[in-house]
Image 1 (tube, rainbow, N blue to C red):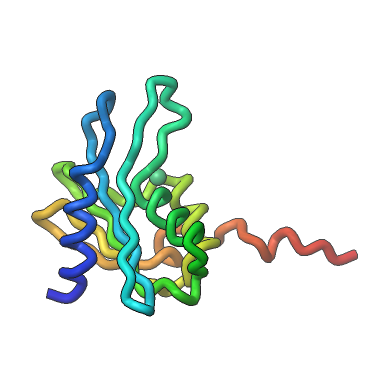
Image 2: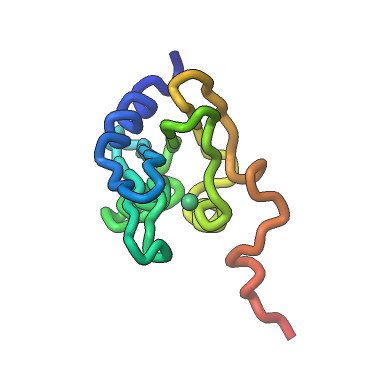
Length: 135
Ligand SMILES: [Zn+2]
């Protein structure tokens, strides 16, 4: 199956999720064009607000390692939920800036798999082009 590599790594990363409150595990994996796999998992906090989503964890890690949007081939996001978990609004806002609009986003809950991209998930987004001031 296409994307089996990143899905397998995302499901393995899901084991690292720290979710004592929601018990909702998310794993993620960014695949770079040079063949690197960068994983992420959700990490919760008793104060709730500092909680970090799995896909943001992975994409921020990729950027921290020096990768940029042109270097990212695809991203997988997997959950333990009954249905496929799509990125939350905050993650969509992050992804619209940090990956290309047509970069495949592969989502799975282990039963069903869906492939989409950030342009479809966050149309008409606010992005860096909106910050250009022209008088
Ligand atoms: Zn999120």
